[in-house]
Length: 446
Ligand SMILES: [Zn+2]
Image 1 (cartoon, rainbow, N blue to C red):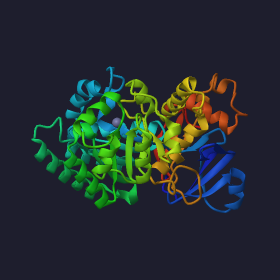
Image 2 (cartoon, helix red, strand yellow; image 1 turned 45 degrees about the vertical axis):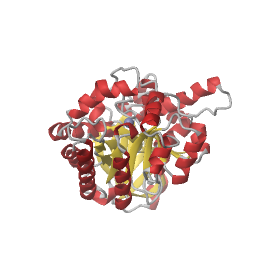
Image 3 (spheres, helix red, strand yellow; image 1 turned 90 degrees about the vertical axis):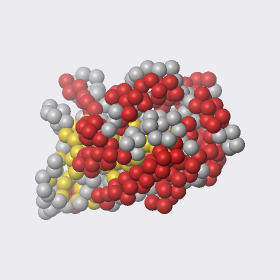
Image 4 (cartoon, rainbow, N blue to C red; image 1 turned 30 degrees about the horizontal axis):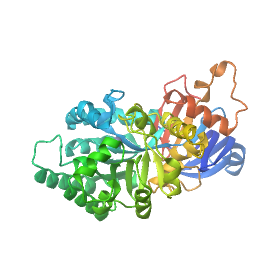
C-alpha cells in the first residue's frame, strides 16, 4: 500500500488509446496523483519542473510501462475453478460443469474464493470488472464484502433464474424471492465507496428466466438506475431453444426488448448470431455488447461479427467470460478478438482485420465507454481517476533484461508485444484510484 502521503507520482512509458485507431505514448512520462485522481500528465521532466518545491513521492522508473487499468465487462465469479473443462457446447457445458459448481457457491465458499478471485484480477492488471455471482443472496453479499476490501472497481449481481434453476423452490416463489433478494443487495451495495462498487441485476438468459422474472428485473434495474446484465445469442442451439420457449417474439433480442431489459446500462454477453434487425433494436436502446472471444472459441460458439455490430453503432467491451473463457488474462482476450476477425477475414476479404491498437482500446477506453465510465476511467486524462497498471516489459521480451532489446520500441510495438505475450508475469503493480491493490513480489519490481 502507498504510504499516507497525498501526492504521488508514477514514472514510466505512458501508453493509452484515446481512440480506436490511435495510441498516445510518452517515453519517460509521469502521472501525478492526488486524492485518487490524475492531476498532471506529461513528460517526467516537465512535471518535475512544474511541480518543483512540492513533496512528491515518486514510484517506479523510466523502464516501466504504464497503461490504464484493464476492463473486463463479463465474467462469472463462482465459475473460475472450472476453467478449461471441455464440453461440446454451451448448454451441455452448463449442465455438466457449471451448475453443479455454482450450486456449491454458498456464502462460506464465496468468502474465500471471492477474495482470491479479486487478487487474481489485480494480478492480471484488471482494475474494473462486471461479474455474475451465483443465485444465493448471502453468497453475493459475501462477494461484495470481499470486493469492498479488494479496492477494485467492481459491478456484481446475484444470478436470477426461475426456470430450470438449480434451486428447489417452485418457479413463482423463486421469482419473488430472486427479485426481493436482488433488490435488497442493490440497495445495500449499489454506489458504495463513491461508486466503486455497483449492482447489476442479472437474469441469466432467456432459457432460465420466465417472462415475468425478466420484466421485473428490467423494472428493478430502471428503478434503481442500476446495470443489467444477461446473455444473448451465444450459441445456435441456445438460439433455437429460446425460439421454442418464446414463440410469439420476433427474435431473441425482441424477447429482451419486450420485457424491458434493453437500455444504455444493459450489457449483453456474446451477441454472435444476431440479425441486422436485432442489432438495430439493440442500438436504438443503446444497449452494450460484451465480446468474449476466448469463450466463443473454447465453447465453439461462433465468430463475433464485430464490423456489423460497429456499423450498427453498438458500444463493445471485452470480457473474459471465465469460465467459458479459460483465463482472466485480458491480453489473451484481446489477442482472441484480433484472431476472430482474422479468421472471418480469411473467408471474406471485406471483413476488416482488427489490430492490437484497436483491441487495446476495447479493453481500456472502449470498455469504459461500454460501461458508461469513459469520463472517469479508461485513459490518462487530467481529472480522471487513477486506475493504472505498471508493467515490466523485460518479463515478456525475448532474452529479458540480458540484451535490453526493448529500449527503442514504439508505443505500438509495446502494445503488440503485450497483446501477444502479456500476462500477470508482466504486472509489477496495479493501482485503482491511486491506491495500490497489487504489487508483484521482487524481483519483478522496477
Ligand atoms: Zn457468461
